[in-house]
Length: 129
Image (cartoon, rainbow, N blue to C red; front, side):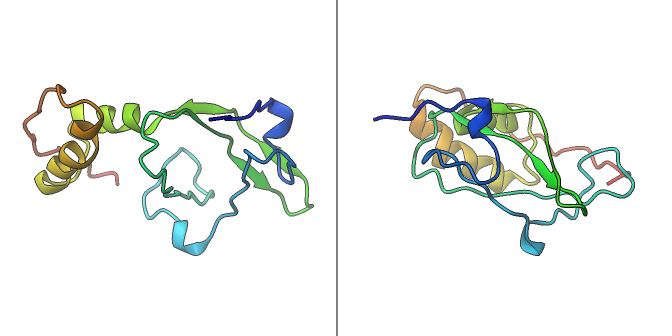
C-alpha cells in the first residue's frame, strides 16, 4: 500500500497531501484532565478508528490557531497503536481490570499472540487530578 511521502511542510493546515488530515478541536474532545502545565490552556484528546492498522506508522502534529488567526505548530510525533497499547498495558495505566483485559484480548493478543499477559495492578490515585 502506498502511504505517501509526507514532509514537515505537508503537516500544516490546508495541506493538499492526501495523507494529511487536519482535525479541529470540539467540545466533545475537550479533556476533563489537565494534560500539561498551563493554568489557562484547554486540553483536547482525539479518538481514531485505525481499522486494524495497529502496527501502521502514524504522525501527529499539534497546532493552535491564535486570536489573530496565526497558527503555531508543535513538534511532529510518530507512533503506532500497538506500541501505545503495550505501554498502557505493561504499565497498568488502564483505570480498571476490565479495560486492562479488553486491551489485551482485543488488540495486543490479536497483533502478537505470544505477548505475555500482565496481571492488573490497581493504579494509585493521584490527588492532583
